[in-house]
Image (cartoon, rainbow, N blue to C red):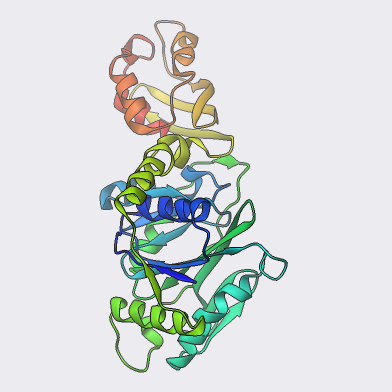
Length: 326
């Protein structure tokens, strides 16, 4: 087994690197990596239903959709992610215990009472510190998971806190779990990087191998291409959400407005205004102009700034409609 060694903390890079290794390396691989603050969305989730958009914009927290299923998780530099890529044999497929066993042994060697729990979690005293997921490609399996070490619990709770927008989606909703940082349960203090190095040495000793691999310039070029095509793409991170219906109502100076619309592949498919507002032009003209737009703040804002909203709804400005959209 090869240990892929790098220190890049860009979440787009790290997920592209996983895909690149999965699709191109023959050897079984192990990788430990950290992300700058970000939300990792499960493959089948509705991004807007999982993320507190106001908070992540304020804190400059990125959003990245994973290849794997499961729920949304928060990452920062106090969290370590681990990845195993192996042949998809009968004893490996959907075998979460097999891949998490080395991590549990590493923690138990530090006198941390960690255990496997439920479908795919690792816990300490009933509190979750690791969630795990798998993705399959040809004859290989990618297994990855989180290791909360010293993450900000404030950011974790606020970034994933869902603002009730009456989203009725068909995706998988995240379950809010009680969580714990590993650092709180260590007998002796360690930094997150000391812990990372300890885990690397421990796991590689289990496999009796210490072969290190550093990405070449050609590797990095191909990883950058995957970033551009997928992981730094709005279409992947937001547009790939399941279909959903959005509804929001608010009272403005010009009256009460309720806005309903359907979104498919991240784009508005049907939109209707309801309320006791006064209008000058046929409101359907305005409704039709929204069709095909991304349900994304910058695009909607640019559209509204050019749309003369006051020509359709009296005493209502474009900022009011923008507020209704998110």
